[in-house]
Image 1 (cartoon, helix red, strand yellow):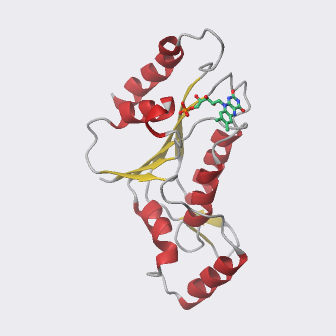
Image 2 (tube, helix red, strand yellow):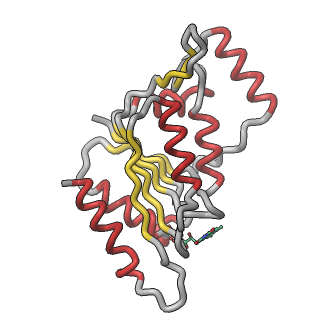
Length: 187
Ligand SMILES: Cc1cc2nc3c(=O)[nH]c(=O)nc-3n(C[C@H](O)[C@H](O)[C@H](O)COP(=O)(O)O)c2cc1C
C-alpha cells in the first residue's frame, strides 16, 4: 500500500506542521514524499493548458504533464501537510492541485454530466498548524474536502494545532491536542 505524502511545509525542517506529519507517518511502509516547494512548480500557463488539452484529446496519457496526476490517482492513501497561511494554505499546494486535477485521470464526467471521482485513495489526512486560531475559517481544509469529493475520495481526516504564534504560547501545549489526534488516527 502506497501512501503519498504531499509536503507543502515550505519552511522545511523548521516547520512545526512537518514535525506533526513526520509523527503521523513514522514507521509507515511505502511512503512516497513529494516536497512541493522543491518541485518549483509554476501556475499553469495558457500554453500549458492548451498543450495538456491536446494531449488529453490524443489520449497521450503517458505524457510527462500528467505524471503528478497519475501518482495522486493511483495512491492508496494520501497525506497532505500544509501550514495555515492567509486563511488557507501556501500557494504551492494550489499549484500542485492544478497539476494533479485532470479530467479522465482524477475525475471524469458521466453521460448525464455528473462529476465522478476516479482516485483510488479512501482518505486524505490533512495536517496543519496555525499561528492564531482557525475559528471556523480554515478554507484550506474546506477546499481539500471539496477537492477530495471531486476525486471520489470519501474521507478527509483533519488535524490542526492552533495558537503557535501567540506571544508567550507554550508550543508543546499547543501541539499536544494535535499529537493526541495523530496517535488516535494511527491506532
Ligand atoms: C505567509 C504566512 C501567512 C500566515 N497566515 C496566517 C493566518 O492567516 N492566520 C494565522 O493564524 N497564522 C498565520 N500564519 C502563521 C502560521 O500559521 C504559523 O506560524 C504556522 O504554525 C506555520 O507552520 P510551520 O511552522 O509548519 O511553518 C502565517 C504564516 C505565514 C508565514
